Length: 121
Image (cartoon, rainbow, N blue to C red):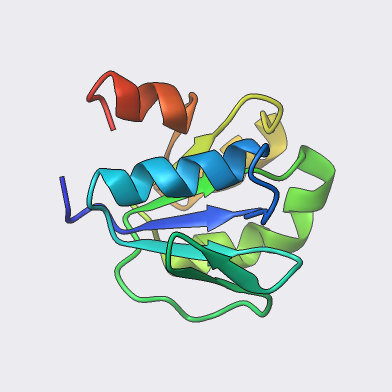
C-alpha cells in the first residue's frame, strides 16, 4: 500500500474539513502524502505547499476542490501523470473526466475516507 504516493489537492488546515481528515488517515495508513492548499502550514507533519510543485511519482491525486476551482489545475494534474484521480463527494466533474480519459488517466468518483476505511484504497 505504501507505494501509492498521494497528492491532496485542496488541503485545509481546518481539522473539520475532509481534506484535513484525509491527510491524517493517509498518514495513519503509512502512505506518502503531498499537500497543496491556499494556506501554508502542516498537518501531521505534512507540509502544505501553496505553490504548485513538480512532484515525482504521484500515484493518486485526491481532489477537495469544487469543479469550478479545479479548472485552473487541469493541465497541472494531467502533467503529473498520476495512475488515478479521486473525485471526492462534491468534486464530481464530467468535463474533467473527459480530459483525464483523453490522457489515459484513470479516475474514480469515490470518497478517499471510505476507500481507506474499507481497504480499497
